[in-house]
Image (cartoon, rainbow, N blue to C red; front, side):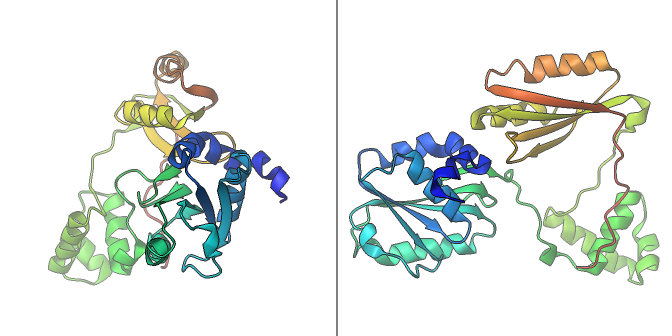
Length: 289
């Protein structure tokens, strides 16, 4: 993709729309340097540099996350912005920050900040999307027996430890200890679920395009409403929030959309797909990890 077409690339557009002004304030009137990390950071780094107008006081550089192949003179006496596609585990972020720390005094670097499209760890200074405060569990925290226990309890939360122990050839005490471990690590919960077929007859999948702050407001407003059974932050395709709801009838659904979503001025557009009641998965997949 040529530099001239970068600003037409929807993720780059979204990146600039959401964090561009904040980044512009960060640089202010100071000299700056945008450093994009290879391979994916190139789109956002060069797109941002072009959007800023290729300013003479903002240089453009690149490097690997360990600091290799960096043109250091482009950093001297400047504010630094590291740009990448995402932060997944934080390991790459830490390598980059350490690489900058080693150069900060020698190159008289004024400040270092990090910008990404998707931040899964909460480490970035500027980001478009990210996970909610509770970081998802890692499959490395579980083994095959843990997954089997979760599967049984997902299908029947009242199933006893003795019954599960017989199924997986483990002692009931062993099952109990594993469940306690899962609870302690906040990996697993047992909850009562409403039988939605008794109360509702239709569902809707609502795709919303809004600014970053409006997205946060909507999540805060909708996450505890009884009709809402799913909220997902997404990127691309000019949508950033998916809301799944159930309702007793179409009138209630329309009122929900009008009162809870359309009233927010930051909502740019919505797309609604109406259907039958959702088919809820009955348990965890028997995948082998």
